[in-house]
Amino acid sequence: MKSMQLELPSAPSWGGRRKGAGRKRNPKSGVPHCARRVYKAAQSIYATLKWVILRGNCYILIQMKGSMESMQLELPSAPSWGGRRKGAGRKRNPKSGVPHRARPVHKAAHPVHVTLRTRDDVRGLRTARVFSLLLSSIKGASHTDFRVVHFSVQHDHIHLIVESRDKATLSRGMRGLSIRLARAVNRALERRGPVWKERYHAHALTRPREVRNALLYVLMNHRKHGSSSAWLDPRSSAAWFDGWRQDALFEHALRDLDGLAGLVPPVQAARTWLAREGWRRHRLLGIDESPLARRVSHPSRAPQ
Image (cartoon, rainbow, N blue to C red; front, side, top):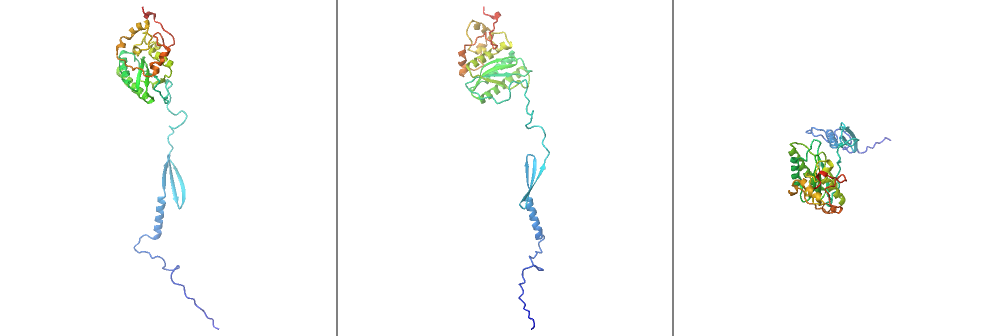
């Protein structure tokens, strides 16, 4: 028996790997498909690069196929000065008695004792030429919400008792008054530059006795410094003060004022209860009293 071979039908001729199979290349295209894939991959990589600048450090973040690699570039370090460290900051003047701190809240019912001190090269505030300009400056500084009630001018500092509506008004009023006084001093002394040694010192007067002590200290400050031998200081608001104890000594002391009482008052009348009436509970001021807590006597000037 002869072997018999059966041939199965051949498979279809399409599909599979064979010569000439696949997408035919466009003869007009100059960029092959593989190059396009590389170009698109490069575009996606370029789009994922991000630059972040944070506190002087430059970070390059590279994202590729869902993974992220971080690389940090350090710039030169900043200079060593500045910042929080031991001994940093503005140095305090050892001769300054007024620290640079926030001032306390001011109440309209409390008068304020203010002191302004001049620089070491500014003296002679009690001279006639300087004092006349200071007097007009004090008069022009008062307004509805800020009032100068009393003052005393010494050779190198000025004492004031002022009233104000609130903290902001007190600050603005004192700033304006300080500028007025400084310009008056420079104009009288024919000089230029700063006048005040430091910021003004302010002390709120909250009790009647405290107000009386401040009035005595301001109006009789010439006795503490020996600026004048007169009973009443003509370089203060003593001529317009109505709280003196009326006696024979007071009538004699009015001669020291040289007619100042007849001038227009450069100060304003007190409106707070403490400065107007409250302090009088502890008796009126006597012209023989002194800020040194002792009474003084002038035998050569005693009334005859």
